[in-house]
Length: 415
Image (cartoon, rainbow, N blue to C red; front, side):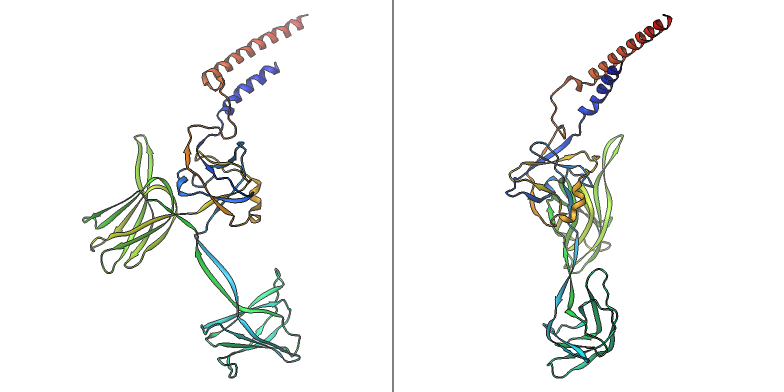
């Protein structure tokens, strides 16, 4: 009887097996000349296929084996601190007296602090700071301040910042009292230059720009229409008309509401910003996936403005994966409900070069239905009526065998 139960379990599992995960679109990747990690750009040309958290993306080699990857995303703004050295003109240490450090500025830009990189030392030192334009005549800037115990538990050096009133001398002299202990080991003197840079974006093509002015509502409506669903992360808008203007703009995205009457399009508010004369307004958007934007300008009692330029951008996102030389790979996109894959590679993000070479995907293709792991040959078990008929037959056989088994058991008891 056990073998019949196995048959039933097999038939019941057929429906799950044959309804394998399907993909709705795919795109090929160019072959690479060298094996290694590469970043595959999720460009605007394929923006219609990824879901909001990009969990429905899979990468396959030519043997239809799944290739692990990690998702990388540009940051809208990067802040980077870089230590810039001052020129050390002289470093003189007098035993039992003091250490004198003379620094030269590249220009006479006003500064109010100097950063020193000093080897760790559990000691307290008194110091003073002077300034000069000719290294002959020195003037006090700050007198009698202290370096307390210098102890960085993470590194062998620590940063000590000397703050002082804003000054623009060409030379600075730092004098440290060493009369009661050995001198400090000052490695560098300089300042931290914080640079700000924007992330990398790709322009999103706009199919049409339509404008309409409402005198009654005192508003100007601007419609940005895309040819398909697009990912939009940034908007730029410049207007022209009046010599001086400052106006409020509300941004809406086009969406679709599903109802019994069908799909009903509507616009939902996203964010707002201001436009002013002589400037291009730039505003970040919360990663919209839409086929259109509507911008509503509040004119109040002013005459309407005209669009000088309007651009939208998608923040660059990538999947980073190890690709073999001359191998052919395909990136595929599943249903929006597809869960994110779980790869070991996710534990080694820091071991991967932050900026590997970038690959552009080829033209995308829309798929009808395609198994995600292997192609199965046609079988009649894919017909649901046949599957249920087979299950009913097996259940009947099991019932017959059960009755027969009961009768045989009762017959043996009578004997």
